[in-house]
Every structure is written in C-alpha cells, then in structure tokens.
Length: 549
Image (tube, rainbow, N blue to C red; front, top):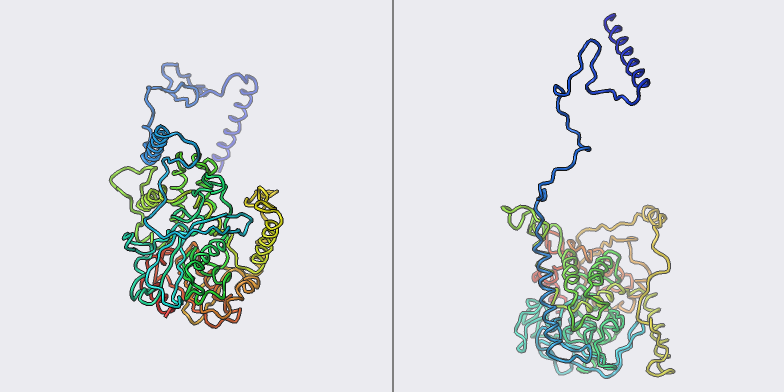
C-alpha cells in the first residue's frame, strides 16, 4: 500500500515539474528527445527517424495512384448521339429545310400496316385544348355479325400500338398474341375485336409527332393536354364510323383497364360488359411519382429541347433512363430474386460502374430496345393523362363544367373564342411543398393501411387507405350499377397494387352492382408483377374467356 502511495506521489511531482518547465519556456517543446533526469540526451544521429504526415511534400511519380475507370455504357450513348448527329447533318445537306416536318435522325414510329380512321369533326378535349381533325390507327380480328353486337373494344397500355395480334398485313406477333384467336380469351370465332392506338400516341394516331393541319408543322409541345376520357371519346368516334351502337365488352389492362372503366362511365348505354385488369379507378401517389420521374428524365435530356427535337437528335438518353425506371415497376422483387439473384454478368471480371449485375444488364437492355421506338413527347403526354385519371364524381363534374364553358366560348367567339394561351398547360404551384405533420397523425389515428390478402370471386375484402372506397368514387361509378364487371389484380404488382383493384370492386358493389367478379392472383400464382396481364395466359386469359362467355 505504501509503495502505491509513493508511486502516485512521484507521478504528481513529475507532472508539476513538467508544467513549470512549460510555463517558464513556452517556446521549448516538451521534447520527444528531452532526457530524463540522470540521462544523457540523444544526439541527432542517434535519434530514431520519425515520419511527419503533414509537413512533408507529397511524393510525385508522374503517374496516378490508380488507373481511370472505363465507362463503355457512357461511350455507347455518346456513340449513338454522334451517329444521330451525322444522320441529321446528312439529311440537312440533302434537302433545303423549310419547316419542322423535314426528315431527321428520329425514327419513324410505326409498327406496320394499320387501318386509319380520319375525323374532320373537331375533338374538344377536357382541359380546354382542341384537335381540329385527328386520325385513329386501328386493327381488327374476327368478323362483325350482321347486327354489329359482337364487338369488343380492346384498350392498350401506355406505350402499346394497335398491333395486339398478327394480321395478314402485319404478320409480326402482337402484344396480346396468345390471348386473341379462335377459342382464346378474346375468341375470334365469336367476337369482332378492335384495338386502337390512343390519341397522343405515335403509332398512327394523332399525337405530338403529327402535323398540325392549322400550320403544317409538327405539334411537338403545342399538342394539348389529354385525359383518358379524351382517348375514349376519340375511340367512340371510330365506333360511330363503323356503325357500332353498343359494345359487347370494353376490355383493357393497365392504362387499358383505366380506359375500359372510363368508356363505360362516359358511355354507359353503349357498353355491355367491362373487363379491367391491373388498373385503378383513380391514379394514386406512388404510380404518379414513378411516371413523374420518367418524364423528368426526358425533360432533363438537353436534346429534348422543350419538345422541339424533330429533325434533330431525339432525347434518347432520357428515354432510355425513363424506360429503365418503368421496367422496375413492371416486375416484382421476388421474381427478380429468382431470376437474377446477386449474379453478375461476368464474375471473373472486376466490378464495374456500368451494368455489372445481371439485373442491371436486364434494365440496360430494356432501355436500349425502347429509346428509339417510341416518341418521347408521346410518353410525356400519355403518362400525364394517366396521372390525371380520376373517376370520382367531383372530378367528373368539374371536367364537364370546364367543357361546357369552352363549348360556349367557341360558339360565341368562333374558332379561338375563349382560348387562353395557358388553357392547355399546367403551372407550378405558387408555394413549394411543405411537410404537414398533422397528416401523419391522421394516418396513425385512423389506422390507414395498404395491406390485403389474396381473394377469389366471392368477396373483395378491400384493404386500402381508409379501408373502404371514398363516397366520391362510389358516386362517380354509380352509372355502372347494373353492368357485369370483371376486375382482376395481382398481389405482386407494385405499380397498380392489388388493393386498387379491390377498391374498384368494392366501390362498384357499393353502387348496388351485384354483377361484379373480382379475382386476385396470389404471389404463388404469379410473381410477374404488373406484367402478369401480358404473360399469364392460363389465369388471366382463362378468367377473361369465362367472363365474356
């Protein structure tokens, strides 16, 4: 115990001595080579070498520490830009350009021969714009019966053409090839099937890449804003032309499922049966957000040029990224876990910042296939129409009032009566978004959720925000109280989650409709996510065939 006390006392004395020494000569460091009492200081030669990290100049060999990374994926994009630039220059040298319709490097957005319906009757659009004339590209399969009562109108997804099935004029397989034909989901032994390219598209129907007949130039972003109901209204002009008073059925998946519902709401007396697969009755925040970032990718591509890229280099880089984002939403994580896992394209090569994992190469391939086959402006306009979709009563009333006001202005003021320059545009809000804490409190208090389980036709077991459809949506769908309706969803779908199809089915039942068949494919039945409607012939095709009779 005494020895411990002595040691402690000695340490205190040594510390005090060091403090006094530092105070008496602050310029003298508490040296690393100072000798302790009774010891000789080390000479400079005898001192050990010490490395000072921050006071020595860096050693420069003239070569970088590491080699620069290579980016073949970026090289490919730059190479394509250079090729498109050369094509534009060649086209410019071969002819004198007098307007924006001159040919350039952008591809011809066609998929083969179609029928074309041309309307000279102006089409007034929901948000104030107008098409003084328009074309609808369409294809048909089967034979129309004498009284024209066996017609099925097949609606497309966002970027699909009218080529749902091969034809004599275009033998290439269509996007629903295995669902259309004798004995199939859309049985051509029974039905006459019509599929159109929507207005706003680029596969033969009037869209942003079309010529504005008023001045002979491409619409570009002078094309007016569209809604899903605008698309449907144009389709029914075609039906009028074909002499079809009433459809046997309106059928569609994804955006087509939205159109299928919209057609029946807009023309309830002209639609017999309704099939809506992997769709919604009103767009929800997640899907709106995903389409927003796709549009943003295009708008941020310098080659987009505010939509006036025709005859120049199209925004292929933005289009490629937009498609890669979209592809993520079309499939499911569990499917990709099975399909790709963590496997790399070449495990024997070092990791790369370009596509390296198999899932990355898959997304890159999807973007490459798409970036020059669909018009970027069409993607912008059609995707925005999806965002604006809402079959609630309040929205329908507001749109009808706006259309009536515009029609009155046209009657009183002629061709441009009541027209405002920003009538077809959307503007930024006056104030930026601010987080609203009370919304989180309401969410927790009301127990809102997004869960749900797989169900069959017996009941929807709706489980979504608010737990039951809003009264506004029920009121908006009330015109369908007696229509036979097939609603299908997929549990693995992240773009249009299955609770959104439950919302449709439950809202329809709340109108008093007792003819609603609702099916939901579990993850055990399909891991293909939103794309299930394109791939599952057995379940999707079988249910559609049974429902149509």
